Picture 1 (tube, rainbow, N blue to C red):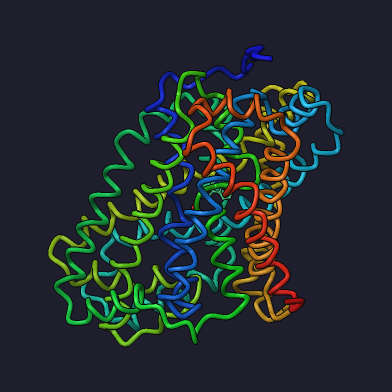
Picture 2: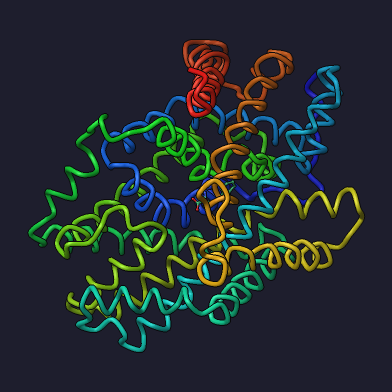
Length: 453
Ligand code: TRP
C-alpha cells in the first residue's frame, strides 16, 4: 500500500519552506482586506466568533485532509483524485473536486487581482504623500476616484496579473521562498506597529469591543454562511490550492502540526488587521459596514497622521501587495499544473493562457465598481456575485466533498499512513471532526441560508 509517488513538479526543500509557502498562500487580501470589511458588514463580534469556530472545527480538519490527499497523489488535483480513486477502487467521478476547484480558483483570482491592483496603486499614493495630513473625506474621495476610473483599475489589475504569472511560470517553489521568509514577518511587524498606533487612539476599546463582544442579535443566516465561506477563503481551502502545495510536501513532514501552525498564523494576522482598522473607523466617525473599500478608506487616515506615516504607509501597501502575490500564485497553481500534466503545455504557455482568461474575467469586476455598478442580480453586483458564488458556495462544497472522500472513500490505512500520528486520541479527534462536525456544519449552514431549516 505504501507506494511512494513522486511529484513531477519537484518538492519543497523542507518543512519550514512548506509552512512559509502555505502561510504565504493563506495570508493575503483575505486577512487584511476581506476579513475586516465582512466582519464590519456583519455586525462584528458574533461574526468573528463564528468565523473562529469555523477555522477550528471545519478549517483545520479539512486542511489536514486536503494536504494529505495532495501528498498521496502528488499531482494536479484532478490527477490526484484520479490516482486516489484508483487506490481506493472508487468511482472516478470524484475528480469533480478537482474540476470545481479549478473553476473556483479561476473565479477567485479574477477579482483577487483587481483588489490587489488597488493595493498596488496605493503604494504610489502613499509615496507621493497623497495621504499626508489627509482628512477622512479626502481619503474617501481618493478611493472613490480610483473606483470611478476603469482605465486605472485595469492598468493595476493587468500589472498584478503579470506579476503573478511571471512567478507561476517559473514554478512556485523558485522565488517564493525568499519572498515569504522576509516579507511575511515584515508584514507582521508592521501590523503590530499599526495596532500599537491604534492603541493610542481614543476609540481603541470600542474597536476591540466591536470585534470581540458577540451580539448575536446582529448575525443572520447569511452572515453565518459568509463567516464559514471566509474560513475556507482565508485558509485557501476547498479548491485544491493547498492540495497542490501538499503535493510538493516531503514525506516525513507532520501534516497535523503544520496545519495548526498555518491556521494560527493566518488567524493572528486577520485579528491584528481588525484591531488596527476598527479603532480608526470609530475615531473618525466612519461606517464599519462601508464594504470592500474599508481598509483603503481607513488605514490611510492613520498613515496621514502618524509620525513617519509616509514610510509606514508605503511599506504597508508594498507588503500587502506581496501578501496578495504569494496568495494569488497558489490560487492559479492547480490550473497551471493541470495544463502542464494533461495538456502537455510548458508552464509559460499555461500561464499565458490561464492568466489571459482570468484577466479577461477580471474586467467584469473592474466594471462592477463603476460602469455596471447598478446592474444587479439578487441585489449583487458582478463582483459580489462572483465572490459569493466562489467563496461562500464553491469552496465549502469542495471542502464538504473532500471530507466525505477522505472519511468514506479512502481506506483508513492510507489516511493513517499519510497523517502518521498513530491512531490515538489526536487521530480520532481529527477523524471525528472530519466525519461528523465539518460536513454536518457545512450542510446545516447551507440549508439554513436557503431557508430550509
Ligand atoms: N487565502 C488567501 C487570502 O486570504 C486567498 C487564497 C489563496 C485562496 N489561495 C486560495 C482563497 C485558494 C481560496 C482558495 O487572501
